[in-house]
Image (cartoon, one colour):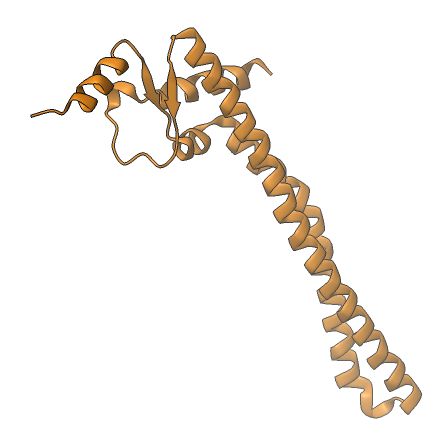
Length: 162
């Protein structure tokens, strides 16, 4: 038997339209996500190449020290060792900076995409007169109220218009 409060709650919800959006699926299936990943990859390729080149230069200097060390003066050995240490420190700093920049850039792109998704969800909700859209923390929802595909289609259309 249903209690009075539960009956009142069910009556209050009649006529309201509720929808659910799976934000992970929307993001992963949007062309904006792929484009952002490609752009990020292109941005980082040049820096990765530079870091690899610096690592190769250090390795070449180490090989030179091992190969020519017995023939070098103490001053030459010391200068080469200092150069290797200095370059190694700079490379470590550059790698750390690269990693931080990568994470920062990734977060910027995610935030931008999340904003786009939110705008599309709001547009669709207004157009379809949906009163409540739920995204995360949902235990169960039926396909009837899932508007994720509509959001993805709208994102694709917006992407193609660019």
